[in-house]
Length: 264
Image (cartoon, rainbow, N blue to C red; front, top):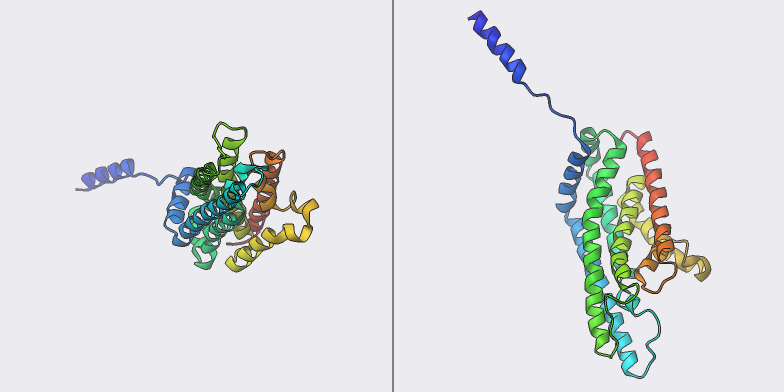
């Protein structure tokens, strides 16, 4: 009996499996589940798409009426269809803020950091999962806005094509602009840890161009500068987007440094 017990114990030890440590992909999968089941985040993204499309269609209609009334067709007509980006970006930023600050308001942050102790890995996984869904939503908003807007403008005799210079970049840029703006807000949420403070800061950044005036307001604030990538004829398209990226990276670095100093 003793020998059999010894044999069974040895076999149990041989076949026992040690749980493997969580990988980065495991962390991303966990964050993906959190985000796609967070009603507030999904609703904010849906509102962002709706506002972007409706505002773009309204602006396209106004321009079509102007053209039919004998007005000139000057200006960047691709941006006319993408005009709603200026308003939809707020909802995308709120989605990013909710994706992060809900961890603190629900006290889930302690559980999350217990599962993924590395602050850097946790933030990167959260950012990756959010960016995936925000980019898909942003590209949908941009493409639908262009499709509806160009259809409306065609009724006024103005025809926009995907093969026109800068159009494909502007459409893809719209998705990048909305997703990166949401990512900036996510990093801001990690830094401030409070939903009210984060959303308030988002609105402060949004109105900053009005405070700085046209000389600086078009190039320094993140949302206004980044919006340049949605314009087919903008010479500063990528420069503006890089400004938005620089803001996002700076806030993310500050958030990481702050999380390293905190318990949770």
